[in-house]
Image 1 (tube, rainbow, N blue to C red):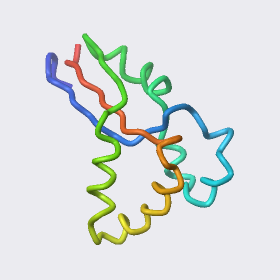
Image 2 (image 1 turned 120 degrees about the vertical axis):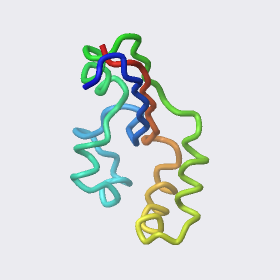
Image 3 (image 1 turned 90 degrees about the horizontal axis):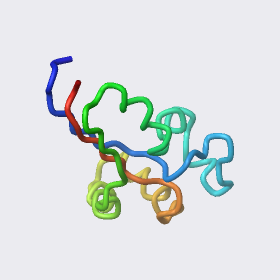
Image 4 (image 1 turned 120 degrees about the horizontal axis):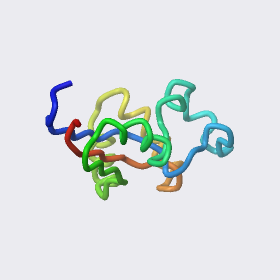
Length: 103
């Protein structure tokens, strides 16, 4: 890693940890791979914080717009995601943003 490099990352996540307590309505919509990768801000924070100077992490405000853009295309994965996002209805999933510089 290059010292003082700028870091900007956005990725799907969860509003809080659900892996041990998956909501019944979401069980058939989230596969194991997604559940292993989608975590809350609090889960991700200690993974990045030791390596960054002025670490900032938070929920992106564009969640609805970003998903609507994705779901409106005819990509087969986007078509599959439509039911998941409709069922979630803003309750569990989010988009996480991270920005800073490498120490």
